Amino acid sequence: MFTGLVEEVGTVRSIRRGRDSAVLEIGAETVTKGLRTGDSVAVNGVCLTAVSCREDSFSADVMHETLNRSSLAQLRSGSHVNLERAMPADGRFGGHIVAGHVDGVGRILGTEKDGTAVWYRIGADQSVLRYVVEKGSVAVDGISLTVAAVTETDFSVSLIPHTARMTILGEKKAGDPVNLETDIVGKYVEKLMKPADTGGQKGQSGITREFLEKYGF
Image (cartoon, rainbow, N blue to C red; front, side):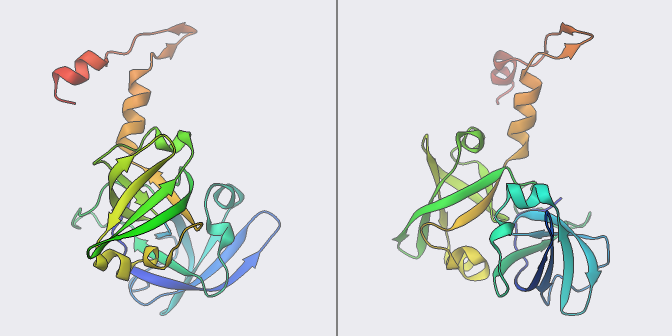
């Protein structure tokens, strides 16, 4: 599990591409400290397993499904990537629950300066937008951000200078792809709201809209 608080911006050193997979070697200084083979690292919000570790880099396999469902397929040697190690059990929970399982790829539609902040408007499929709510959380390239506005075709977030400076989102421009992961809580609520199918007969979920409203949801 991750929090969406990027620890470091790394650099892709090499990509070895197979027919349906790839191996990334990523240069880094912070996330490699104490990193061991088998540990998880979020790369642009995608949970990958370190298969080899060195003092200044690590390598990770990227499977066919991951290449299809994320923007990692578009990485090149020299590309910058957001990096975050898995959250330690005794760590601070400063962002939100991020699983590292990307729901889809969005595209930056435009940016706009607003004082010291920068607004990003991001287009996404309806299958992703259904879980994006105003004032809720969303992970954009692995960055935990608060949703400022949502429409039927896109949503907007506002970046403070620190976030733009410490992540790759500050490098992005209109037309660039971004990995999106919505808040997992919404997916579980939707699942529990649906009647269960038991033994060929549809059961009835005990959770209803009225139940949620009664208890403040």
